[in-house]
Length: 68
Image (cartoon, rainbow, N blue to C red; front, side):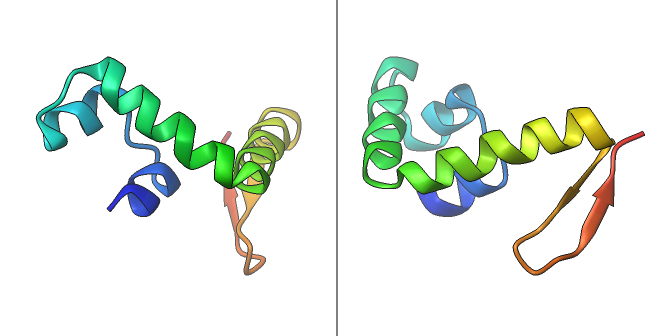
């Protein structure tokens, strides 16, 4: 569940509600997840820059989504 939650942008508040834990604990779990998968964080940051600069992003499979 954590993989999909992160991939689809679920917030720490959303995770804490689903898991019935404090936001602080959800943050620790997500931080640990990212520590083992630094390439995911790098990819996400690159997509944010791409969206800001070009008003679109591309998925790993090459599909584009516009953000006018």
